[in-house]
Length: 378
Image (cartoon, rainbow, N blue to C red; front, side, top):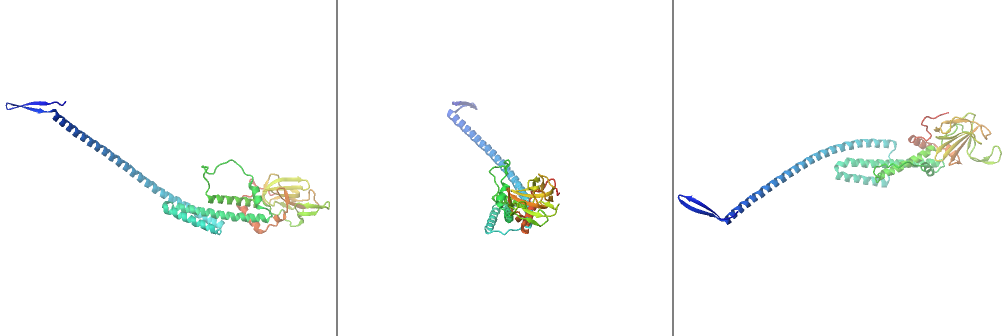
C-alpha cells in the first residue's frame, strides 16, 4: 500500500513533479488511524459513562421509590401498632379491674418487689431503644405482673383449701395425688415448634392453678353435709358392745336415730356405686366421691336412687328404716377412705370457715356430683 508516488502537474506550459514518499504516507495513515481510534475510544467511554449514569439514576429512583414505600408501610404499621396497643391496653385494664375486684391485691414480698423493679427497668430500656415498641413493652410488663398476681392468688387459695382438708383429718397431698395420678391421652404439642415453651411466669401460673384446681376439687368431694336432719346420735364411731351379741365390736360409722321415713340426704356429690341390699346393712346406698372417698347409708326403708346415677350434695337418697342387722329405725352412716372406714365426726362437725372455703371452691369448679341430664331428688 505504501510506495513512493509521483504526481505530474502542468501549469502554464510547465510540468512539475510532486513526489509523496511511502514514509510520509505511513505517517499520515497512522496519524489518521490513531485520531480515529482515539475518537472511537472517547465516544465509547462517553456511551458507557452515559449508560452507567442512566443505570445509577434508575437504581436511585427505584431505591427512592422503595424508601417511600417502606416509609409508608412503616407509618401504616406504626398506626396499626398503636391501635392494637390501645385495644390491648383497654382489655388489660378490664382484666386488672376484674382481678382486683374478685381476687384482690395480695401483699407483695420483698423479692417480688425487686422483680417488679427489674421488669420496669427492662421496659424503660426497650422503650428508649425502640420508641415504637414502648406501648407493647409496657403491655408485656403489665401482663407479667398480672400473671404474678394470679399466681399469688392461686397459691393463697391452694393453702386455704389444704388447711380446710387438714381440718377434716385428711392429708391434702395424698388426696390430690389420688386425683392427678390417672392421666393420659395422645401427645398434642401446645406450640407448633417443639422447642418453644411457655414464659417462665406463665409456667409458674399454670402449675399454681393446676395445684389449686386439684386441691379445691378434692375439697369439694369431701363429705360435709349432714345425712339426716335429725341430730340424735344413738351410736358413735369406734369400740362398742354389739347390740345383738353383747360382745366387743368395732362400729365403722355413726348411727342417727329418727322416725321411719325420715329423708336421708347425700353428704357430698358423687356417683352412686351401689343402691340395693347389702348383707348386714340392709337396704344400702354407697356414693363414690373420688380421691378414694366413699360414703355409705345403711338400714334404709326405701331407696330413691339408682346405681350409676350422678347426684349433688343434699339430694335425697331414700328414707330411714330398720332393714338388715338393726334393732330399730336409724341411719348407719360411714365414711371410707381407700376402702378403710374412718371417723365421720370431723366431716359432720366442720366449722363455718371450712364450709365457706368449700362453697367458694364449688362456685369455681364444676361439682363432681352434678348430673348433666338433671338430678333426681327422690
